[in-house]
Image (cartoon, rainbow, N blue to C red; front, side, top):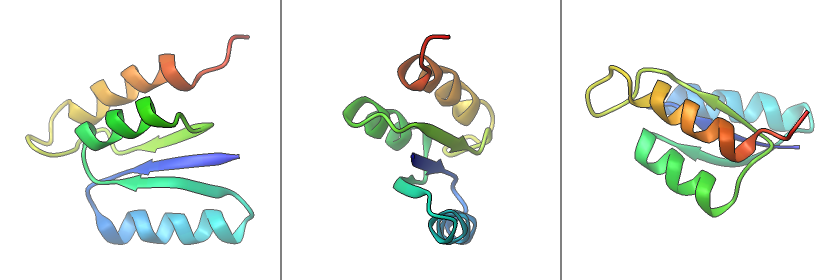
Length: 78
């Protein structure tokens, strides 16, 4: 399983990545804003994405909107 972490807090991203990797879960990428998240998901969709819903530049809806956009790219049909 490959997970992407999207959060503007570097310490949180790096800490979560270490915990996931220690549990045997691969971290495909770490990104700090919604624009980077969307670009990385388009380039190489992960199995799952952990997203901070309040991300730069305005800390309002960017993360939430990016999370919604990634759902259609990463979700498998049920």
